Amino acid sequence: MRKLTAAVCLLGAMTLPAYATAAEVAVLDWRAALMNTQSAQSSLNQLEGQIGNQQREAETLGGELQQLQERLQREGETMPQSQRESLIAELQQKGSRFEQLRREVLQAQQTSEQRFLESAESKLERAVEQVLQRHNIDVLVEPQGVLHSSTDLPNVTNEVTQIFDSLN
Image (cartoon, rainbow, N blue to C red; front, side, top):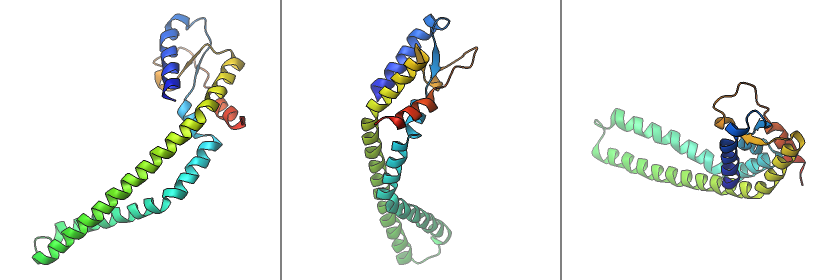
């Protein structure tokens, strides 16, 4: 996927000045095209099923940690030493669990994203190729790569998403 992105950006950057008047130029936000596909939505739903409980537990722990910290700041100076130490130990324990959950969720998200991108790469390339041929596009650039255009460039992102969804 990075190769595809780099190639598209490099192609756009190198050829845009030379062919701007003679070439068909279009814009493609490939990330948005992919994220709007049915495959991406299915992958996100599957990921939510896998890590939903961990995310909810992390959110709950985050709230508890904040309350414990506020209590320690508010009452820490006046509470007995043993109670303060107990509160600090609870903070550390919950903080450790929160960090563990955060790492697990992040790892699951990264793994899921990588798996999806690897499985989607060839379909995305085929969808992009179909759009390029259909509209006789010579130069394809990312929206962030367009510094200036005196005309509105056609945006083929939605069309790529539709073709991606139709491919088997």
